[in-house]
Amino acid sequence: QVQLVESGGGLVQPGGSLRLSCAASGSIFRLVSMGWYRQAPGKQRELVATITTGGSTNYVDSVKGRFTISRDNAKNTVYLQMNSLKPEDTAVYFCYAQYNIGGYWGQGTQVVVSS
Image 1 (tube, rainbow, N blue to C red):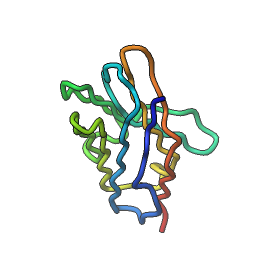
Image 2: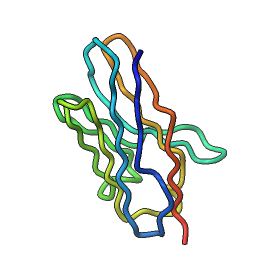
Image 3: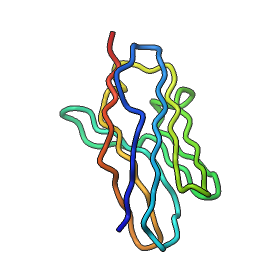
Image 4: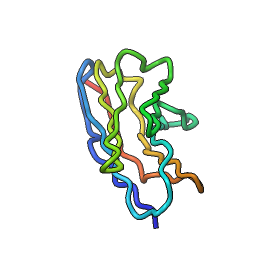
């Protein structure tokens, strides 16, 4: 049973920073990539950033230059460093793990950017 344990969400003022973490465990299959998606109230879930085991990254345009995704392959953990946060970054952030046999979602962690 694959488990994705997320942490690091919370309330932050505009311009502030947060770091999200997601640790994957419980699978004997090969982990291909991990990433973060977000869903704001009334909106569809959107990709924020992904990273492969080889280190290739992909970002949505709205976070480029502000967010950095990284991973620790030995720990099957992915991180999202979020800087210069804006109110429009407010959303539930979901971790996603893509294995060679399928993908899995985390439960989500709330990020609120507000003064």
